[in-house]
Length: 135
Image 1: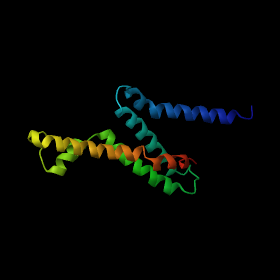
Image 2: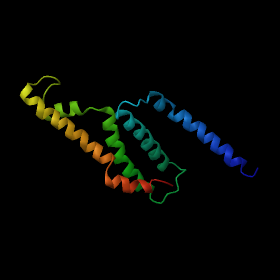
Image 3: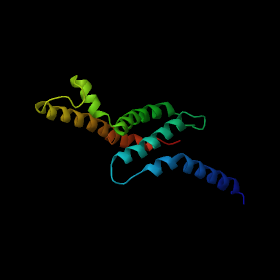
Image 4: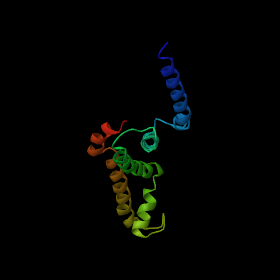
């Protein structure tokens, strides 16, 4: 019975996690990569909050938060999926208001910007840093 406190604390933490994650899991679907980005974004945001909290004792928490912020920004852009709008701004055109000759370049730029964010999230650098994202 000396571990009873641990089990109670673990149970409370589990219930808090269920509440915290319920909206994300409820909306999750298996048919699009978009939902993977949403799940990862939620996890990264939770880790940022933890590393900025008084519960974190890591000596390099500021460095970890900086690393996580880079990933969070890329994931946030992937979740918002506003690459089309970003390409419109880049080319200075109104959405859906350009000729067919221009459309190919436009969509190539949109895809290039999206792929840059994907490369940030799934980069070799992040795969090496992720093992240090613990307390």
